[in-house]
Image 1 (cartoon, rainbow, N blue to C red):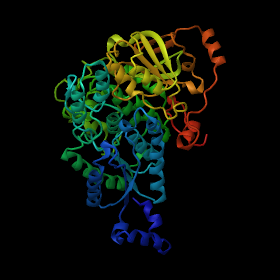
Image 2 (image 1 turned 60 degrees about the vertical axis):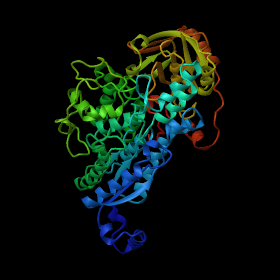
Image 3 (image 1 turned 45 degrees about the vertical axis):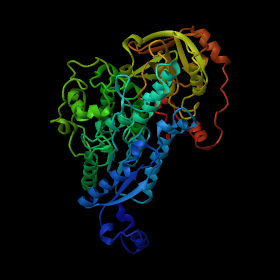
Image 4 (image 1 turned 120 degrees about the vertical axis):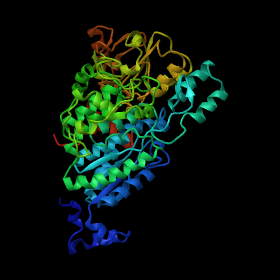
Amino acid sequence: MSHRSKDILSGPRWAKVRALMKSMGHSDYDLERPLIGVANSFSNIVPGHFNLRQVAESVKQGVYQAGGTPMEFGVIGCCDGVANAHLGMRYILPSREVIANSVEVMAQAHRLDALVLLGSCDKIVPGLLMGAARLDLPAILVNGGPSLGGCQFDGRSSDITSLAEGVGMLATGKLDEEGFARLEDGVMPTCGSCSFLGTANSMGCVAEGMGMCLPGSATIPAVYAARLRSAQAAGRRIVAMVDEGLSARRIINRQGLENAVRLGMAMGGSTNLVLHLLAIAYEAEVEMGVEVFEQFSRTTPHVAKIYPAAPANVPDFHAAGGVPALMREILPLLHAGALTVSGQTVGQNVSEAAKTGDAIIRGMDHPWSAQSGLAVLRGNLAPETAVTKPAAIDPAMQRFTGRAHCFDSEDAANQAIMERRIEPGEVVVIRYEGPKGGPGMPEMALAMKMLYGQGLALKTALVTDGRFSGTNNGCFVGHISPEAAEGGPLAAVRDGDEITVDIPGRQINLRISEDELAERMAAWQPPPPKIASGYLALYARLAASAAKGAIIPHRAG
C-alpha cells in the first residue's frame, strides 16, 4: 500500500521536510518506511498514564521490528480523581474534544500513515478513539492498564473511591483519624487506571469490544510485564495494518459500536459509556442514538459483576478471563463477523477464550441479572432521556419515591451533605450541571460517596443533569436531558415535590400535573452563565445535549 507520508517526503520539492526530519537523527532509511504516529498522553499527574512513557518505548520497539518508523507526540490528559469536586471537574468532559482535535491536527499536519493511541483514563480513551474515527487512518489503542487493588476495606480490596466513603465514615465516627490515614496510604499501591469498573476501565474494555485493541489487552494490570509485551505486539501490528489498508472506520462502524454497547451492558460499565459511544459514533459518521442503549438494555443480560456491583475489581476480572471470556459468553448477541485490529473477526478472536469459574463472569443461561447493567429512563422529568446503572443499585432501591431537596450546584449539595442536612426519604436534586449549565457536565461522584458513607445509600436517591463516576452506587440517575440550563423540567422542581424513580419501568417522573409543570416553566428564567470566558465558555455555547453525547458538532449540516 502507498504511504501518504510520501506526499511530503519524495522528490526535490520536499527536501526541506527530509532535512527537518534528519535534523533529529532520522535517516533516509527511516523515511522510506511508514511513519507511525504514537499519540502518548503520558504525564506524572495522572496515575493511569504514569507508565505510558515505558509503554511507548515498547510500542516503538514493535514498530521498528515490523519495518515502520515511530513518531511520538504528546496529548493532554486530565485525572478525574484529582479534578473531582472542584472547578477542575468542569474541564474533564470538554477535554475529550481537545484530545480528538489534537490527534487530528498532529496526524494531518505531518501526514502520518497510522496511529498508535496511548491512554488509559476517563475522557482520554474516548477522545483518542474520536480522533481515530474522524481521521479514518489505520489506528490501534494501547492502554496502560488498571492498578492493582489496595488494602482491605469495607469487605473488599480498596481503591481511590474508598477514601470518599471514608470521609463519610469519619464524619459519623465509624472510622478514626488513624484508620483514615492508613486507608489513604493503602488504597492505591501501584500506578494504573483506578482498579474499579469506572469510566476508565469501562472504556478500555469497550474499546477492545469494538475491536480497537488487541484481544485480551484491555485489562492487563499496569505493572505486569505482559503490559509491555502487548504494547510491543501492538507496535508490530499497526505496521501490518498499514500494509493491509485496515483503517479505523472498517472497525469503528455500526457493528463494532453495537458490540461495544453490548459489552458495556453485559459488564455493567460506567454510565459515561453512553456519552462516549454516541460521540465516537458521530465522529465515525454512524447514525446511532440513545435508542440503541434502550433496546440493548432490555435484551442484554448482566453476566460480569465488578465493583461497584460486587467486591471483585478489574484485575480480578482479568484473572477470570477478561474481555475475551466475557465476549465468548455473549457471542450470540454480538456481530461475530465484525473485523478487529488483529485482522481477525470477533468470533475468531474469542474462539478459545475461557472464564475461570462463575464468581465474576457467568454464562447467559444463569446471568447475574436478566437485563443489563445500564438503563435509559424517560418521563416528564427527562423527556429526552436520562441514564442510570442498575448493576450498582440495590434491588430494593430500583423503585424509589421521595421528597425533592433541590440544589442549583454540586458545591451546594456537597456542603449540605457534609453538614448532615440530607434526611432519609429525600431525593437530592443537583441541577445546572449539564454540558451547558455546568459548564462541562461534571461528575457528582463525591455526593453519592458521602451519602454512602453516612449510611444513606439505601434511604435516599440523587438525580442530576450532571454525570456520575463509574464507581457510584446507591440510587442515582444522571444525564437528565434536556438539562436545566436549557429549560429542561429539572429546572422546575421545588423542595418537597415528589419524584419517582422506576428503573424496571424505565421511568423518572415529577409527580405534579402537566398544567403545574407548564406554569412553572413559563415563569422560569435562565440563570447567568457560571463562566464567561475561556474554553469552558466556548464549550458551553457549542455543546450538544447529553442525549447526543455532549459533543461539539462540527460537520456541515
